[in-house]
Image 1 (tube, rainbow, N blue to C red):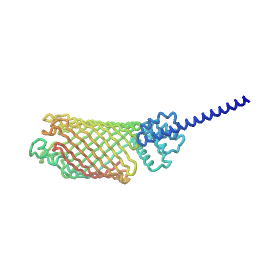
Image 2: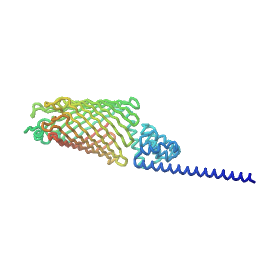
Image 3: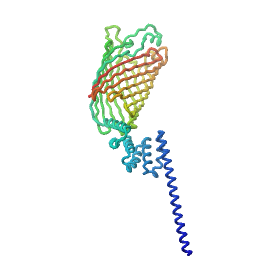
Amino acid sequence: MMKHFRHSYQNRAWISTCLLGFLLIMVSWSVVAVAADALLEQANALMRAGKANEAYGLLAPREFDQAGDEAYDYLLGIAALDSGHAEKATIALERVLAVNPNFAGARLDMARAFFALGDYARAKREFDSVLSLNPPPEAKATIKQYQTAIEQREEVKKSSLNGYLEIGLGYDSNITAVTNDFTAGVLAAYNIADIQATGNSVLRKSAFMFAGAGLNYTYALDDQLAVFAGLDGRQRDYQQDSPYNAQSVDAHLGLTAVDGPDLYRGSLQVQSYRQNGEIPAAPPAAAPRMDQQSVGINLEWRHMLDAANQVALFGQYNQQRFPDLSVFDLNQQIIGTSWLHNFDGSGKPLLYSGLLLGNDRAINLQANGSNMGRTYEGLVLFGQYSVFSTVDLYTNLDYQWRKDSSPYARSSLIAIGNDQLADLAVGANWHINSLWSARAQILYTHNNSNIALYTFERTESSVVLRREF
C-alpha cells in the first residue's frame, strides 16, 4: 500500500512539474511575443518619423531570433532599403515573398532594392509583377517613375545618333548688357566726367532672329562604357544692330561609365564665339569685339538614390581667351553639387537645385597692376510642371554673388567690386509630337553692383521652333 502511495505521489509530482514547465514556457513565449511586438511598434514609429537608420539599427541585431516572422522581415527590409543597405533589404524581403508571394508592398520594395543595386533587369521584372497585381494609382505612379528612370539608364548603354534644328524670333532690350547711364557710371567709378559710350558700351535694343543646329553621337563600348561626341552651332542676327550679330560653335568629346545607380562622365569641350563688330570706316570708330575662344574639361558624377531623387557632383576647368581684349583672359575653375527630385502626382512636378563655387583667375594685368579675376558662389533652382500631357511650364533662377579678386580692378575709387547677378526665366514647352516642339520664354537679367558702371538690366523674350531627328 505504501508502495502504491509513493508511486501515485511521484506521478502527481511529475505531472505538476510538467504543468509548471509548460506554464513557464507559455509565460516566456508571451514575454517574448510582447517584447517582439514592442520592438516592431518602436521600429514602426521610427520609420514614420523618417528615421530609417535608427529603425534598421534597432531591428538588425534581432535578425537571428526574428527571421521568418513576416511582419519583422518586412519592416527590416524597408528599414534596410531606406537606410542605404539595399543588399540586406533583398534578403529580408525574399523571406517575406517566400511565404506570401502576392504581398504587393514587399514586391514593390524588392523592385526598389534591385533598382538601388543597379540590377535594372530584375527591378523591371519585379515592377511588372506588381503591376499585374493591379496596385492602387499611387503605386502605379511610383512604378512609372522607376520605369522611366530605368529606360533613361538603359539609353546610356545604347549606340545612337541624334540631332536637332531650331529657328526662332525674339527681342533683346540690352544687347551688350550695359548700364543705363554710361557717362554717370564712369564718373562714379573713375571720377572722369563727360565720357560718352561707344561700341559695346552703348545701350542697344533690337528684335532678332536666330537659328541653331546640333548633332550628337554615342557609341557603346559595352554595357558600362560609352564614348560620345557632339557639335552645336548657333547664329543670332539683330534687326537694328547688325555689327552685334554673333556666331558660336561648340564641340565636345567624352566618355560615360555606368555602374548601377552611379554614372560618371568626363568630356573635353571647345567653344568659339564671334561678334561681327563695327564697320571700321563708319562712325563711331570700330570698337574691340568680345570674341571668345575657350577650351575646357568637365567632370561629373551622378548617383540615383531612387527613381525620384538624383544627386550629383561636378567640376569644370576652362581656359577662356579674348583675342581683342586680352586683359579679360582667364582660367576658370568651378565645383558644385546638385539634387534632382521628381514628385508624385498629376503634372509630373520636377525640381532641380544646385550650388556652385567658382574662381576666374586672370592671367594678364591691367595698366594699374590689377587684374580682372573674381570669385563667386552660385545658386540654381529649376522647376517644371506639366499642365497638359504635351505642355510643360517651367521657371529657372540662377543667382550668383561675385567679388573682385584684385583691388581697384574695375574702379579707381572703389577697391573691391561686389556684384549680385540674377537670371530669372519663365517659359512653356509644347511637345507638338515626338519630333516637333515649340518653346516660348522670357528671360530677365539684373546685375546689382557696388560699382554703378556694372549695374544693368536686360529682358529677352523669344519663341523657338525645334525639330528633332
